[in-house]
Length: 99
Image (cartoon, rainbow, N blue to C red):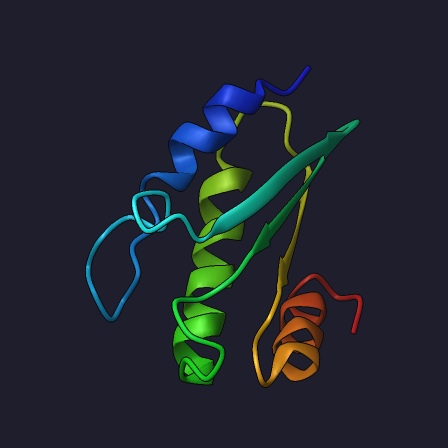
């Protein structure tokens, strides 16, 4: 069984590339859901027009860190409230081979 607290702790390691602070410290993670061996993380950015490369970097870092937790087989990452939400989420989904 996946330990949710461990997921939150790993997300502390993800840094906002613009400010260098943890995305947890900046309160950018909206939710973490665990279903079986899949973790779903929803996040937002500091502003809705944050550069797309930063948005993708954060999403990919979230996936990488959460994937390191024992028992995790899949990490689905979704950005919310961004001017390019659909494009960013399509790229993050494609990273999983589901795009």
